[in-house]
Image (cartoon, rainbow, N blue to C red):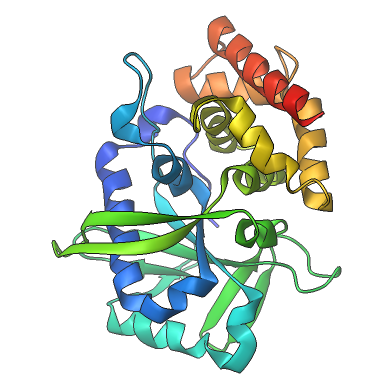
Length: 280
């Protein structure tokens, strides 16, 4: 999988809108399969947090350069997953290619009007499934094994996505989006696995801006604390995000300013400490 951009300046509003339009387009094509699909990844904050109602002086989320789609294990009942590849191809999607030029069965792309990639993810089906590995579903379709993804089907929110698809078609569709607690879990696990600046930023932005305060994120997260992935996520936050010079605050500052920033790092620590206090 290609590395994510490391600073905010590498993201653009235009690309974020293109990913959103791609999401809407896929929702029109996947139709009756959308009940077993949840949107995860970098598009989630802009879907859960109204970007047009941000307080004056607060920045909008930088967006994302790709679309991450989580598949429920239930989609394998009755082999409904076989419809996905048929519909992807009819919608103009093809396999992306890796750095060696080989097709990637878990990552698809649409080239027009501009290239957007879509990654398919799936929860582990047993304890031996290693996160980040590729699970073969069909000869031409696979998904990335993603620990914690099942929580996105427990804590999920239905939102109405409206606007224009990538082909300029006006459309309105309901989609399932990873909820606020599950998003913290998935991003914390991702940060521990790959340590990327963008994951740290997404975590901070979400905790700081979701709903009417940190307590709303905490309420959603507390409902998941019977799950080991949620407990692991809290431990990651304690280890990496509550020290001013810790990995989390430092990498949020690096993402936003390409360097250290005392105010940003203190803000990260403050909001994460609030979350942990509410969850204790």
